[in-house]
Image 1 (cartoon, helix red, strand yellow):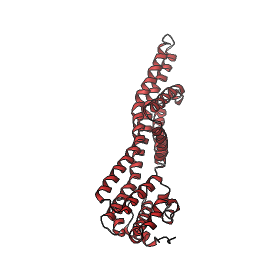
Image 2 (cartoon, rainbow, N blue to C red):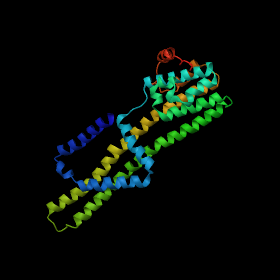
Image 3 (cartoon, rainbow, N blue to C red):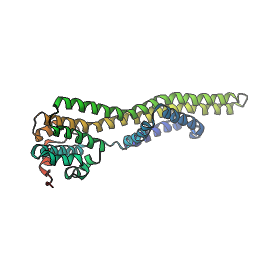
Image 4 (cartoon, rainbow, N blue to C red):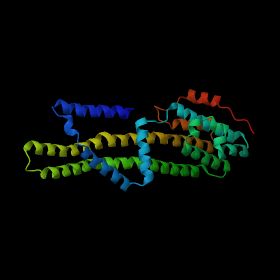
Length: 289
């Protein structure tokens, strides 16, 4: 929502200021300038990036517009799930806990926490490392290094779309100049026309420069920056999971391990101790089959 409001304010101020100076919006209606710039931007975007990044970038634009990031309720649910899993791992036989880890879609623990269940990447991350913990011979520092490596890989993949959008945003002013040059070439072809006609052609050519710069600094660049913020905030759930599981591996009780994870949450999103304790108290262990 913030992006939409921001774009409306930006466009309104730019066009409003232009009209207040006596400009006519009809002069800016140069569809072929938009075709040149938009087509060139799309073409270079497809050339520079593999299709998986292109698709992720399109998905990322939607994420940036929605601005969806974990809130305190999401973190409470994640910590509640981790507490329940760690409690089961501490108090139940290995084979009972393995059933939850191997088939999370059928596990009462995971079904009770749909936010994690509906996030396949996070679900696999938690299940994989719980499985390593259950094996029993993995050293905490080795698991932590492996977690950091995987989180770094996930973060790199998430940032590829950001870099792709940033690159195309950086190139838009130059593509605007390309459109402007082509417009000037057209104007030079009519050099013997009247000053009114020639002035209109040159003005139309300069619209390309305006469009390229505007799209770069007022549209694509801010969207890429917002997407980076949103995806970095969504990466925090992996750090919370890592801190909780490593604390448990180092001998912390489930309640204490969850507090390690809570402290990894940004202060403005961090749920209170009372919220987390209430969630842990309400967590009930599933009945053994």
